[in-house]
Structure formats: structure tokens, C-alpha cells
Length: 147
Image (cartoon, rainbow, N blue to C red; front, side, top):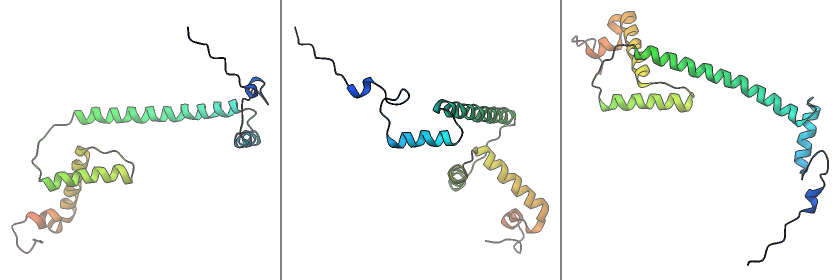
């Protein structure tokens, strides 16, 4: 039979120093003192206040998630259409999505990018008429064309 190992005993852990403390660094003690200075009687009071803040932000996240789901449900009811786009246009859409996600922390769908671009082109055509970029690009009139 194998020899039993003697139990390991840490004498410094046997009798807590301070309120139920095991070992506390000077930084932990300073942090606790700062909390007390801020008006929290115990560390647990501080943790409870953090938990309350997390509940509030959690409710906001749930509301945002619900709004996104409602938006997706509305979008699903839109008529579906298929168009052939050049590889450059598809790459541009992906770049737009990537830039908005990384730089501006926004979320956007391919459909939303295309929808906004089409509506912007339509507004330009109705507001600017002969000088709109679509007329300049696709007009049979040579004087309106720009390269």
C-alpha cells in the first residue's frame, strides 16, 4: 500500500487578519478604503450597486435586441428582388459594412446599404434633375455625360 501524504497546513490562513480576510495586498486594502470613502459601508454594498447597474444595462440590451428583431420582422415582409451587381459593387458594399462596424460601431445589413444608396440616388435625381449623377452617367446626351 502506498504511503499517505501528510496534510498540508498553511498556518497564516488559519486565523484571519481583519474581517474574514485570508491574505490581502496593500492595493486591495487601499481599494477597500476608497470604497468606504465613496460612501459604501462594505464591499458587498459596492457589489450590490454594480449588480443593480448591470440589471439596468441588461434591460437596455434586451430592449435593443427586441427592436432589432422587430426591424428584421418588418424587413422580412418587404418584397424580394434579385439584381446582378458587378464584383466591384459587391466589394464596395462589404467595405461599407466593415467600415461602419469597425469605425462607427454600427450594425448594418447588405440590404440596408443598397436600400439607402438607391434612395439617395433617387433623391438626387428628383432634386437635381439634369445635373444628377445618374443623368450624367446614363444620359444619351453627350453634353451631360461626365467620365
